[in-house]
Image (cartoon, rainbow, N blue to C red; front, side, top):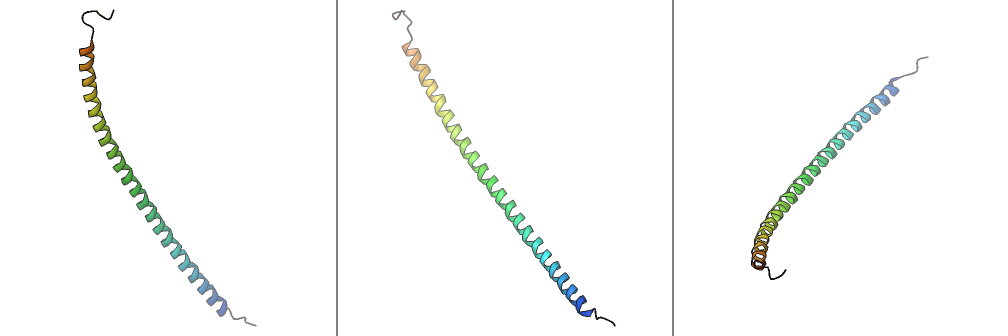
Length: 88
């Protein structure tokens, strides 16, 4: 009484092939998602670097304005100083 195992082998072969193809597709999708995540991280880093450069430029401009204002205040302070002692 030999039960034919040929149909079972075919089913196993087909299922194995489907699992192999599905696993390969899953790996491809995961790799694409990883690449997308890496690209997004690079874009965020580039945007952050640009914002940092912009902030540094603003800081430099403000520092120059502050230096000018400090000089003007020093000049005004010298003009308003009480050298004769009238305000005492």
